[in-house]
Length: 185
Length: 225
Image 1: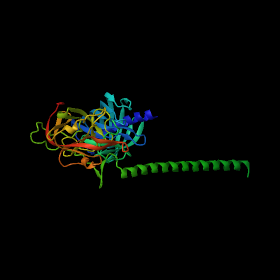
Image 2: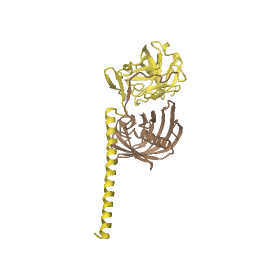
Image 3: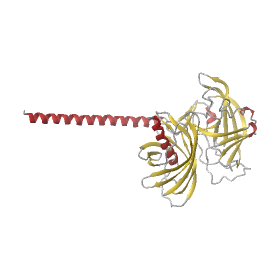
Image 4: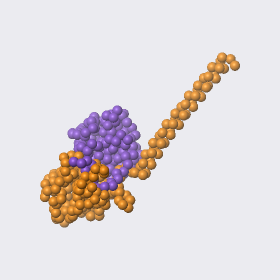
């Protein structure tokens, strides 16, 4: 069960990380463009206390009707080890339903301890509010709520290229001391 | 009352029980859903997900990440127009031989040989405070000789093909509770932190930190160019 939850979370994490780059809803001419993006996610699953925090960077190119994504992820797993992955995907934005549809077309590398490499597949992200989205992955799950900052919307009509994406209920990070070693070396 | 009436009465009774049972189960389900929504809503209100706060003696202050690059200092050899801030990928400190990858850290530092970039702190080249932590000793040590840095020494924080170069301005050993050093700044600075002092078994951390601060001095083409 735990393994299945982790696999599911892997899908959700990747989908939301990629999806988080899309604020402000508006129509745009289907001009071909390439933009870079950076997304931060604490990536934790409340209650189960599993997750991977890290940064997702890359580029998306094309138009809102059809675009390609190259992405690379680097972060720290819940055990404190490194976690890296990279791959490609395609996507489209439906302005009337405020829904982003993504398809992972390939994974070039995958080294995320505790998270098995997912199969390529499709997913959708629907805007519920300015900073709240619902994530659905294939027939596996629907309606996982995530918080995205700044706002979620059309990928080709925004002024930001840096976002955070967090599972709702994760809570804020509170720093009460300077960073330091958690265990005696 | 004949047998037919008795049967009809029993059927009606069973139906009533089924309806009452369904309504009861629906009510319980509704209460559970309302409870979950209330719990998450209250938690988000008290502790909004995705935000980073620094606990200070005067309360907690939210860290703000600058969303635009600062104007590169005079003497910079690259044009940054059209570029946007990106998370740091490497840190190089030539004087003490530090060449380390940088990974995002929320509260947990890397347990492998890499530096951690504090979640909520600024990205390199922006008008803010880039906070990097590295262990002083053990298998994950990358900032072992940080105490040998002197004013003017170079700290290059890299993103892709750009090195954002900072020059050391100060070095201080402070108490681990000096969280004000994590706060946002108006000027583009880097803050390097490593462990110092003795291991505090009760708190499970070193009691002090060595903190190096540097000022943004130059943007140049890096090794990734």
